[in-house]
Image 1 (cartoon, one colour):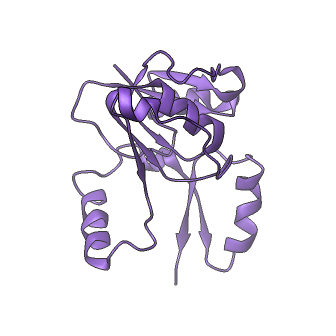
Image 2 (cartoon, helix red, strand yellow):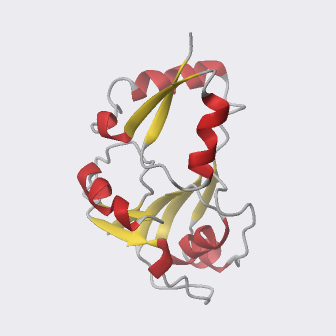
Length: 171
């Protein structure tokens, strides 16, 4: 089985799944492979299909785009697969049918960290600092910005001109 995760995914799977990455930047292919992607798909060459169910390809997915890509993921996720929706970079809309949810048991999980209770948040941060610590963190974090620099840091992300992630230094 393959699992589709965008390059923002930062965890190790105890299962023998092969990770695929989806990107809008062809230039990021080698970077994503270095992070562990066995396969890199380009959004521009992606056939999103239009049927209520397409060929099942993914055991699960983490989606930060929303819109058409998220709808495609619902149609291409295998039986009992989970899709975590963590963003809406492409669109807040989701145009799909209930067919993948009923016939394949696909689960769409909304992630909202804003209202996560502090004790749970601290427990997750502790796990991310220990047993779930990303093994390629030094490659994923490509820059550090101060809190004062933060307003100017967003524009390159909006334009799709950034590879990797920034750490915001507070204090």
